[in-house]
Image (cartoon, rainbow, N blue to C red):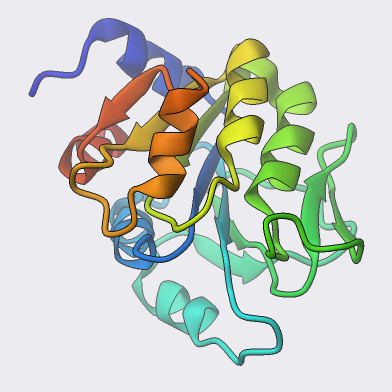
Length: 195
């Protein structure tokens, strides 16, 4: 499929890329991180639901495959271009007005810390139309409300086609709220990321 000019232009103008999902999303996000060039000229924040206190090899797997600099978010880190940030388990990840991260220990949202909604919501006011957000497979509605807020603030909002998602509830919830401007197959999302 040829991606239309609007989506391509808005992707190119983005300064921040948000990649998020839960069950069934890891493979798609991993494939995206693998193809990013060193000079993507954007900061990337990955928010994946993880079990509480469950040791994860996510950072190691991403770091071994990414051509971009990659690290887990630390409190007060300032977002840098050409860097992939991974939201840590057991914290909500927020973006502050000075484009630094803050980590929050408040209650789980949709039974999850990090919450996709919390991260999306904080990015929506800071990056507005300079943001692209992609919501992949997941078994609950986390991310749908945050994606809608991003869309209302001018961000480019994309969800994985629920028909190919391992767990369609997350992208479908966003579609139901009219939060997604584009519904794309994972192959089309990867195509966009290479433009």
